Amino acid sequence: MSVPLFDTSSALAPLREELRAAIAKVLDSERYILGPEVEAFEREFAAYCGAKQAVGVANGTEAITIALRALGVGPGDEVVVPSFTFYASAEAIPPTGATPVFCDIDPATYCVTAETVKAALTPRTKAVIAVHLFGNVAPVAEIEALGVPVLEDAAQAAGSQSATGRPGALGKVATFSFFPSKNLGCFGDGGMITTSDAELAERVRVLRFHGSHDKVSYEQVGYNSRLDELQAAVLRVQLPHLDAWAQGRRAAGEHYIGAGLGEVDGVALPTPSAAAAPAWHLYVIARTDAGHLEAALNAAGIGCRGYYRTPVHRQQAMRAWGEGVELPATEEAAARHLAIPMSPVLSAAQAQEVTAAIAAVT
Ligand SMILES: *Cc1c(COP(=O)(O)O)cnc(C)c1O
Image (cartoon, rainbow, N blue to C red; front, side, top):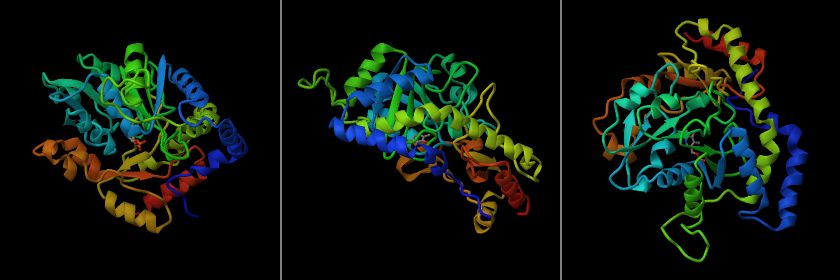
């Protein structure tokens, strides 16, 4: 029997009729951009996160650029960002005119820490992007205690929890992606910015609509970056199920522990950060022979993938800012990590099968 890396269809299967009806309703309304579905979803998503405001945008990458601009980030500023993350976390910085400054991670949690961020701070640091990588939760309050505002890149952490609240409400501002494979995904591209700062939210609303308050005068160069009505309608059907799906992802992690994956020779399991309950977006183990393990598991029908083998600071597009940067924990994670099957419906039997397949690779 094979086990896929993802299963996005099983969770949606019981919702197909409701989704069709939501799409039909938008079609009949003939309102496609910034209408009642987006407004309602913004309210519902803000309430879910525990933030005062949510603003829908076109995708999770533009969400970061727009949130940084709304924070006042611009030319001459520096933004600290991890290098062990999806490329977009850093790609979103240069369009603001600011410079990415790469920092290291905690290899156990795969997230940045106050110490790794501190090592990258300078008098020009204007913001820190704390990525809640793989659904784990970065220590946002400890980082903000260093005196810099934090933008949470929560693209992979919808449904996760920490002792002090959910991603989306932990820092000054947060960004989400609703790319179809994320924990909460739409049927195309979509994104969200959450904050409890009303003035910041207003700046975001202006920036997402061409830098205009009134749609006839243009105060600053902005963006055409909106979540559309169809995607908002689809997301409104799914949001009430996010907690159950997150619970399924946590249960899948427990199934791996129960199957003894943590005792398999050389395997390091992902460590939830202090007091966090991650809704694992990806379940990422580490082993020194990750490349060999990846090939052997795929050959055996077990879906797996090393997502970030080349860290962002060593990508060609980042060479102006990555040159000479040394991040030992990032290099180690890049070489050793391997995402294994994870979904809201991964069963104990599947976890046992994956564990047995990993144990058989020596
Ligand atoms: C997916 C992702 C993004 C970008 O989101 P898009 O909607 O694809 O633009 C940004 N950061 C992280 C960590 C992501 O996983």
